[in-house]
Image 1: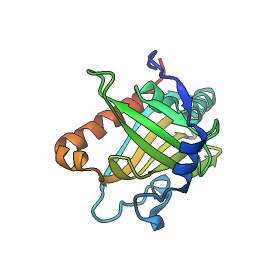
Image 2: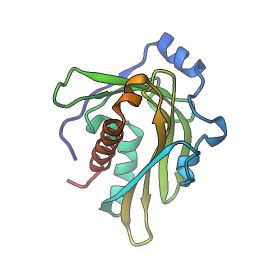
Image 3: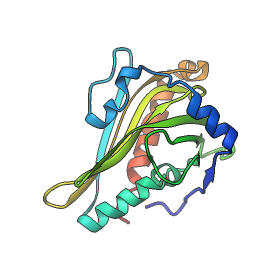
Image 4: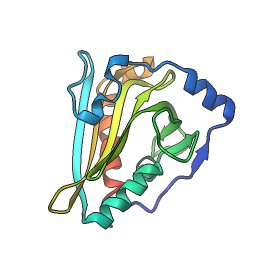
Length: 191
């Protein structure tokens, strides 16, 4: 796992209230659909990737604890400002995605947790985009353990550009999403 972990910062009360009141920027009837592996709505690009990240119940529980503490995003180089400690439906956050080369340049991506899965062999959450996010869509982060003890981390998303910058970025925007997905997956690998 990466040794570079950004700190979790709280959202101030007024920003958290504004984000909780904001409408999601994608289809309301699709909330949480990434947790079930459903196909994306027409006009949205799907990005799904998975990786084995360890073996055994202890590693599963450690991966879930890291997931619940925004470690996937933080270990990927993002700065997360969230409105609470626990990831429950309705939790809001701003994930600042930076360009590693420039460090200080980044994009704020406001999100709201739209679904949580808490099963014995599968745990995770999905967040949906809020106004100000460069994309519109949903992304799920799920850790699962198979009967043979293999621990797998899956990222499943659908999105389309929401901002002018994202639309102008075209293939570069898609490439940036793929790079972040690889960084997310690497965040939970066994050291």
